[in-house]
Image 1: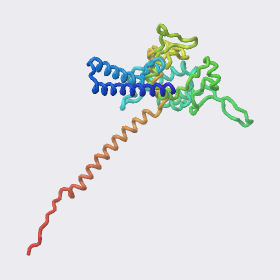
Image 2: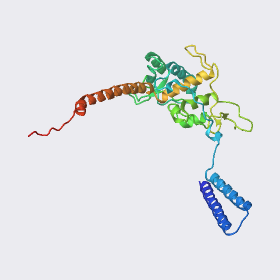
Image 3: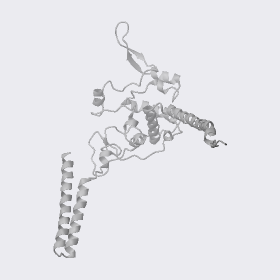
Length: 306
């Protein structure tokens, strides 16, 4: 901060000095006869000083490695104002999350009941919930006990607390994925680019041990290794489980998890637009109907006859 203040103050002082030198040179030229070369040299020096001052006052910081590579814009179906999520992709994305991502990342804001009617039936969601065990209680003796999961339970956490998560991941804390799409600049484009953007570091770039190079991650070095490979998941519907397909499906699932009300909100918005448009047209017609007789009548003055 002090460096920025010093730079800005120095630039302003330098610009004032250059302006004063130009003014003095013009005044001196009016009193004494200077050569054209001397006058041109003075003007060029003043212009150079002003340009340097502007450059110092407006520094340009273009560090792509610090901010991460900007992701490309992909044509997601849910981005259209008249389209919903691809629910087949949500189902496949949940399978990728469950078999790959859930080993490290939690999904605190999504319960099994949220999947009903979106990607799974009620029976399927109940069966998946019952595969997990949850601590409940206390019972009649005041003891906590383990029970099978139910639809109202939220997705199980991979670690009991943050300290355990950091200890298992070399000090890095895997973030919760409930709102990850909204929490990252670029949204779904960033998540997809990050999952598919693992490459070898370029020449001259060193990545310390335990980290992986990904140009889309701020700083370029990310603790999460590349876990999505071709065939790591076998889709139930027979879709080819390529790395890009799995990255796309899990991105759609995480986008839905960040806003489960997305489809319903669009439906309500479309209904509201249609109803309000009809009401507006009806209001305009009633207004013209009620006021037509008043606005079209003619008033005439007839003086009394003697």
